[in-house]
Image 1 (cartoon, helix red, strand yellow):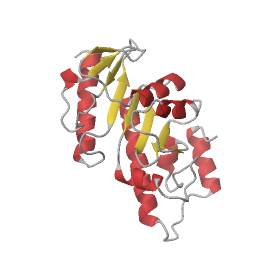
Image 2: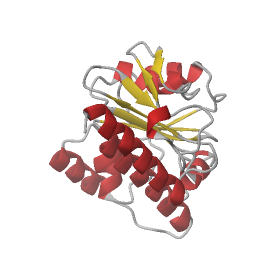
Image 3: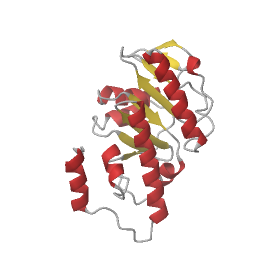
Image 4: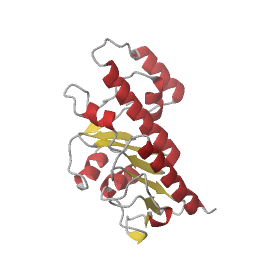
Length: 215
């Protein structure tokens, strides 16, 4: 199986798994991944992540021009901004997952680091997660907001919309965005209960041990 055929299959398999577990619903969410020749595969606009056809996934050149397949997601500006500002990016995943969206709407979270430090794995897989303001879906301003972070964040949550995570490959991006959603769920479940998260010293130890960018 060629690199492209395998990646097409992986995108569909991962997308269906996320859909089946309720991490995104209807025709929401999108995935992109970069091939070794610099071209990109991207889920089509208006498609359900539970019912993707590998043959119809959009293929784009490095300038985001459609080469084959269906028209790509309208969230191209969001994906392209991560590829431009984080050269190590091999894939981008965007969901409308419930707990991440709910947490983004709360008035007292820190927009520069919206996930409370409840587990080491959120720190290890995500670093600090930035909450971005509400922007209309598909608006180029989404890409501008990501570019404004100058590549310092691999994960953001669009307020009232959903999380977006860039990873070195499709599996890394998938694991990271699932960790984001689970941490958001934990944050909501324990909110107001006096839960004890990681201390500053424990956070620093995780950052040192796993060489995390925590600036």
